Length: 231
Image (cartoon, rainbow, N blue to C red; front, side, top):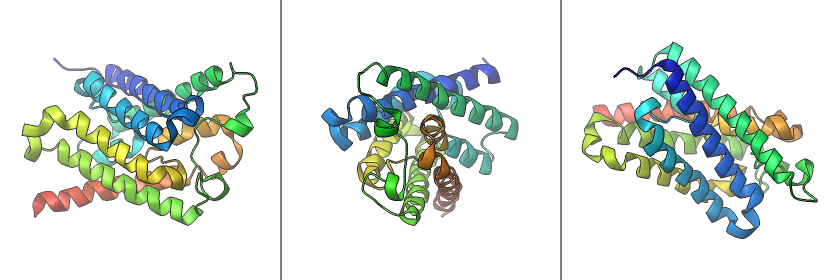
C-alpha cells in the first residue's frame, strides 16, 4: 500500500519530537542523576524506539542531515525531502516547547541558567572546546553516522535489516559518549534548532555550526559510503 507524503511527514514530526524531548529532556530533567552516559543512551534509545515504530512509514530520518544525504544520493525526491525537513524542524520546536513547560514546573528553574539541552561551542561547550573544534566534530561525527546509516540500510546488508534500528541507535549513542563534552552533540540540525529558538543568545548565534556541520558531514557520509559500495 502506498503511504501518503502527509503520513510520512507526520511520522517525521512525531519521531523528531520524541527524539528531542527524550534526548534533551534527559539532560535538563535528569542530567544530574544520569550524567553524560545516560544522556547518550537517551538519544540512542529514542532512535531505536522510533526506528521500529515509524521506520516502515517514513524511513525514520528524524534529521535534516540524513534527509539531505539521502537526497544527494537520489534516494528521496526534492519535494519529499523538503516536506520531511519541515516536519523534523517543527517536531523539534514542539519538543523544545514541551520541555520548557515541563522544566518550568520546578521552582528555581531558569531558561538562562539551566537551558533546554542546547548545543554550544566555546563558552557554551560543556568542556570549553573552541568553535573550530565543534565544527570539525559535527562534520566528522555526522559523516560517520551517515556511513553507518547508508550501510545498514543498503541492499548489500539486507540480511541485517531487522537489526538496523539497533545499529543506528547504538551508533548515535557512541557518538554522544565521545562528543557530548565537545558540543553537547548535534549531528542533527533540527535537534539544535528547537532548543536554540527558545534559549536564544549564543545558542542562536552559533546555530549555524550545528546546521552547516551536520549538512556537510551528512553529504560527505553519503559519498564515503558510495565509494565503499563501489570498491
